[in-house]
Length: 465
Length: 111
Image (cartoon, rainbow over the protein chains, first blue to last red):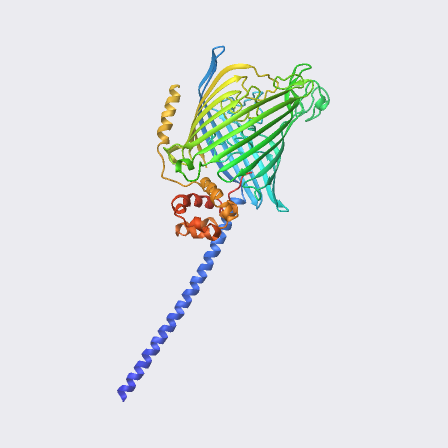
């Protein structure tokens, strides 16, 4: 009996101990669960905070990028009529872009690009009269840093219509189709077939994507040349009139009217594989020759430039990797210059017109040697009076797109050492000028038949990050 | 061609052949989205990518559930995200794209 009682007591005590152990274990588990929950909440808060910090560090300040290119161009010109030539076996140049971007709030962005594009051992300041600010950062000259681009874009919706507004120095170089030959991933804003210049303007963009894949239209109004002033202190012979010209645009000795433009580029369709772009550009007061007094660079009339281009990114539908990575493009363009009475444009009769046309086609294929390397082949053909506004095109021998004759080009874009931050290029451009080369603004020059061959072999290595 | 030109050509040809391992391309991912998913998902690539933060996309890729996360962001694209081609051909490019344009990427769209 005593034994039984003792056993029962021992059993009771043991059970109690077990129960106590269970209870404390449960308490410990509960405490741990609470801790885990707390830690999870902390982790969520940390992630949220990290995202905020990430977004702030990226969005609330200017982000800088670098595009630093060193190149050598081997240049050769042959006048096959006079049997004369000009060469430069090694034009060495460095081009630095300091890119800037900021997005302080949803729908508002700022983009900027400061540029130095210099020949090695250049003069301190290159002041060639023909070098204007529409090509200042696009032609190798001196080591002065200039503003190539600076603009803000504000995007919103007006009654369901997406709209963007922008003012500033536009991304108006190396546009649609020219980015391949420049080894740039993203094209600039306009169609490079007719517009490749650094300009300032105001832009309104209307998006039609809800009706047609990728469709939009931009309306850009800007100024390519500031006239109606003699210098920053005015007409020195008379009263001091800063930024003005005595008599204004009717000044007969200095007929220098401002050159304004309206450019309407747009995407007609873009589904990621097929892209059709169009553009109309109207130039007011374009420069030509005043017949009375034989004055060049006078406001002589208007110019209208039209272009339509098709780009196909990937041939067919997953036929092969090679075709998926192949890009084809073809673009047509037309220019029409209309002189005022008493003036001539591109050698037109008094008040006459001059029209020109051009074709541009290209194919870009995988190089089959490197992972991201591409080989490109392009062809251009332009007529006698073909006169686009492509003076900022980065070709040492002058714009090949503006050729009045034929141009052939081949290039290999590849990553040096396979490093994507070191995009490099070997490019060969062959240009046959059948008429006066159109390499800068010279609407007062009448094209004449010629036979000039120009070639440019470029090797370029960049650091881009 | 000049001696200088020949030397430069030889050097660059040689260096260009020293390639790196296969790497993805955000630009290609963007085009893939536009071509194969934009209409199906009913949103732009930027909106799709901004459904998650960079860290969330990274974690999904590391944990092997990128397809699930993309399906969650675009249920209509389920068949695409579960296809063999997505896994073998498109995943890396699309990941690069969504990571580049994630909600906290700070990526600034162009004009």
